[in-house]
Length: 467
Image (cartoon, helix red, strand yellow):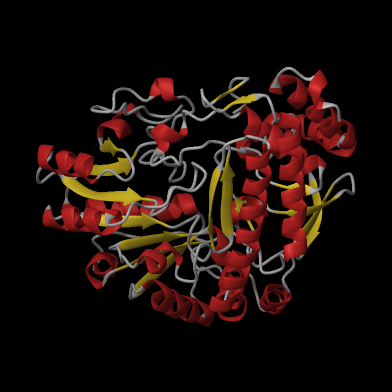
């Protein structure tokens, strides 16, 4: 490609989108058919992405095939679920065995005990219950904190996503213009969410203990707890500052409030004991989903004896028809005891570090600023020179080159999540250095294409938002 004939990233993006669409004729046809019976032609709004949704045929190991028959190295992983890889033989065997014995009873099976024991070992919390999604898990966390304390207010981190229930769908922004002043962040309910839900939250930035302390002092005796991703995972990857997690726990406990970790994206992904083990801070509540089920819908909530006794005594009814579903428990048992063993995280991190180093070297050679991180199966490259410390800082980064990167990776045989700036890659136990090298080659192509279109001094790319 002759990059000199392009004057803006817009032109590059338009060209790559045209290539994308030309390859996806069956996906386009399926989207049209789906649109007759499903809003937007997809099963979830998150599958509706520019330039068109990708329909998938099947997957095996580290690979996935779209409906047009094109093979990709899968680093989308169903938004971070498939760290066991596609059709993992241990999980397949467990599910096949279980399905012949019955798939639903609304009563517990023995596998649930094994899964709970393993989670207690990994996360350092003694008691566990199950549900069916990250949304249900964080909803239980909100309910538990409020039911036990008798208080209504919960502290939430600005910009974080904790599922699509009313308590959580507050202050989730696409634009920095919507955030409000740093001293008084906006508390905005999402579409269709009760406005009163915003009144029950207090918003603070990630990595800011002073802001948390101020809120706790302002509402002394009114805060039930705080929910936080121990690493922000919808802003590339933002790790906690040294001392932040322990400092938050100490402040909350001093005010009689709970600390809940939303480890839906990090649990069993960044470390075999999640961010809880990785950073050495055990909260009162841990929320899990995604990777736990080995590809099946799942959720789990763990807590201290004090927290979970509220369920045992009936202070809070943690219920659900499909909680502890036999298929899910069989898959989770195989995932935890046969697949996601400690050594697998070392191998994944080695592949990820090679990807990060190769990508940043190619971008630096082209004069394109970048930073990134790798933790276990997760990693990210962000096209900016200053690592963001919170969501407010992250939103100041342009999305244009991130969208170009998604398109080039997809056209080059690597399947990434479509929201390029905010979502990270997810590897699996089946990924190798050869798979990672394909990702790096595509980053190098992006670097060659976009060289000269990035103004390092202004830190602004040549085109607006592609969210």
